[in-house]
Length: 264
Image (cartoon, rainbow, N blue to C red; front, side, top):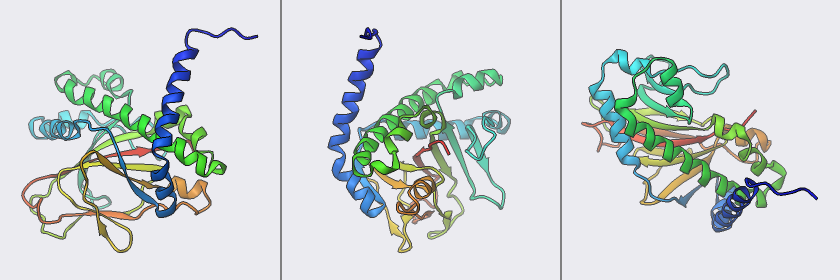
């Protein structure tokens, strides 16, 4: 009989907690399967505070310093990490901060002095972990409904934590007009997306361009391309875009999104 190690009990306890959370999210999982999107409860974290810290960095630091945060860590088609500025005609004009757990180590290796933005990095680390745990709880509920897709196996795989990315978006709305498109219609590349927080409403989804109004302590979950691929088209990736709704014509629009990436 195999002797239990000290590390087994915490793992078992953690798995039990995830199952309990998954049971609570069961109704939301069914709605996600039926409608391709669902608004689910989510523990409140200071997303706005972190977004404001990111904006402060963009406004106060030099262009060279901001560029030094851009790291190319992957040789596949996943997004890079750090701070990325998109201003060419091939992309929607925006700046975003990508966080994954090894970002601080990689910044140090590349000689970037990120310590003066320690609060930004620490907040992002906590929020990345919260998204990982909540998405896994949702997947526990989904896996009971559609075990043939092996979602639980995919989301408890180390590749999920390794690839999944927390993104803080900054769209400079100054100079744009109400109704202008800030992000063209698209489908996300990952498996599940959490749309967590936004400074101004602007997200619209489906062909009917239904506006999404973020509620307190809730997030919008929807499928990406990877879910559509692994399900043979049964799970539909959600088309969506971002527009300037008029409120943000004189200030930058910000949002926070978590992309649940899984291995190919």
